[in-house]
Amino acid sequence: MSDSLQQYVATALLAALLIPGMSSAAGRATMIAPDRADKPGFLVVIDEPGYYRLSGNLKVPDANTTAIEINADNVTLDLNGHAIQGPVRCQQLPAPCWPGGSGNGVHAVNRSGISVRNGIIQGMGNYGVYLETNAASIDRIVMARNGHGGAVLFGGSISNSVAEANGGDGIFGVDLKVRNSMMRGNQMLGLSAYGHSTFSNNQFKGNNGNAAQTNLKPAAADRNVCNGAACQ
Image (tube, rainbow, N blue to C red; front, side):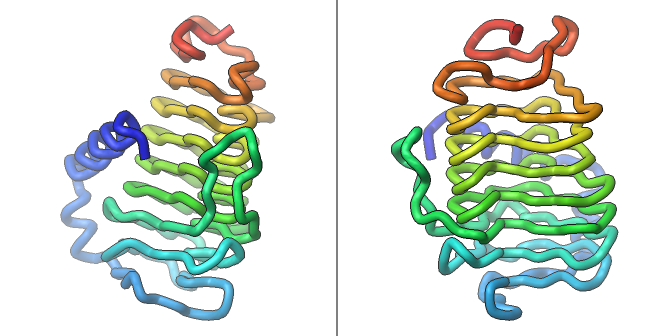
């Protein structure tokens, strides 16, 4: 991980510790141990609503294993400053990431009220975060060097996060609100968004071979920066 990315992570995670209510919520959390192996193909399966926190790094054994599968509504997943670490490497973009696979860092389909925050997801075979849900949010998450992309989100918000050096789009989705985030060095667009999507106060650099950084049309008031200048 680059020095600048490490600095961003440290700043983001420090800010997370200062969020009002975080310490009190932690007392009601269900802790997720790093040695979980709930069923083949999934390290952790969440079947009940609630507040869940990692107690250590989750190491994914292969590119086809999903780290955390969410099968319930109204789940907050706090990585607690830890990392979900897969085996995929994307060190020589634009060459494909290797090995490819179907595993996601966090995955949920047909759910609502899902929140993922405060940690790092890297080296997954498919996507860092894949949320096909209603009212989802990603906050203070670093998604780096995942095989097919950093995040896929169908409705919801991404804030204070980083998508870097992923093998596809940094962030892809529909009806998104993306703000205060960095998309850098992704093989395709930094942000590919459709429907009623908006973005503001973001930094884009070196995505898509330094061609277009996003498919969205920016406005000056949105204060997005692409390769050191206002996005156009």
